[in-house]
Length: 263
Image (cartoon, rainbow, N blue to C red; front, top):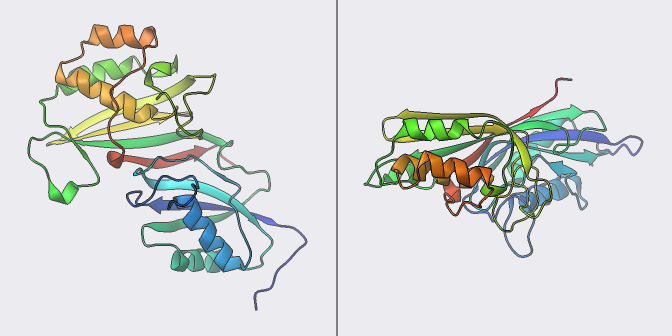
């Protein structure tokens, strides 16, 4: 039998990796498979009672993946962290894994204490599909001028009002906050666009993101690279906070890291 210590509960931080393809996003939804539901079911099975996570760094959308999603939960169990990690990985579906487990201070909050999040978006610039990359990239068949995309991206770095790149509706979250939030100001720390053959990689780090903000930025930059949106029109639309109608699909988006203050 498991031994439980009821004196002081521990705050446990999990770093998750998951394939978001079969899930309807991170956040729990009625009668739909989600990352949160799968994780809480595994926790409940392990500890023999209903369990809820305390927080997650971000609530990724349906089809979005994660290399390092962070959550935390409280438990009074005396089970070692190693046993908890092993048991969770045994109970979780194959698309989800606990990569790392840590004991953290009681006040640690996976969402509110995050200093920045970094997302990656992969574009396969080809007229012909790649079956081996299916489900991990967005195939964009039109010729792209990467230099123009980089020039446009430079306008987005820094503290800006990103209302133009928020969707009209969506669930609130740390990493993909609802566009209904009153504060649409965020700070993008870096946007890096690299190309290797036909694969174009967008890496965006910010202190937070509006709902579908990354996908809207990438979709709009692709229109600039394609030549259907001029740099001047891009700049004017952004300055006047005109909402972008260009949203790239979710399957090529991955939350790759979450940074916290040292100590």
